[in-house]
Image 1 (cartoon, rainbow, N blue to C red):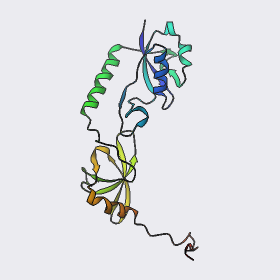
Image 2 (cartoon, rainbow, N blue to C red; image 1 turned 135 degrees about the horizontal axis):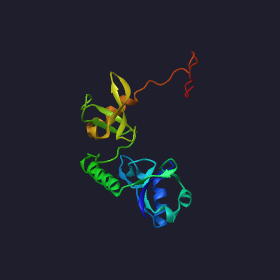
Image 3 (cartoon, helix red, strand yellow; image 1 turned 180 degrees about the vertical axis):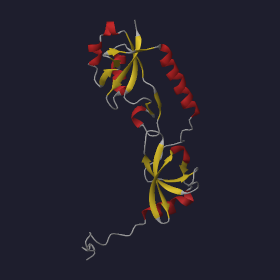
Image 4 (cartoon, one colour; image 1 turned 180 degrees about the horizontal axis):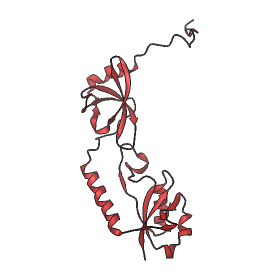
Length: 196
């Protein structure tokens, strides 16, 4: 009898395992959600990294044969016995994932590293910053914010930033990049001017 089982994969191998098993006629469910910057999977990333679900009859397929799938670590088991999941569990995951995607305010576009952005919520609202890149899988990003003349790195939610207004973009970039050129190599050793 076919039942759902949880499969544990190597990092970033979820899609690879899903494709390999799908090609063998096995029903696969890989929960995915729209990511902030995930070009590898057309804007989607696994909701449970390193895990996916397969509906199989282990007596027909055979666990050892399944275990040799490239990228697959193991079938999740307790006391060396694979643990089946009820169909209702998979249906619940699908419903909840749909609710999350419907309610989440995803950013209108991806930002590039070095791009000027404006913070639109929180204690630094209306301040300009420089986008550095994603910080965590939980939709937080790193920005450089100039406070009291010093660039400080901080994390903000990606939904709390927007593209900086064009007229104000250049001062933010200049403020973060205005560093004095180095004059010494340390311990008083001066750097010679290339003009000399």
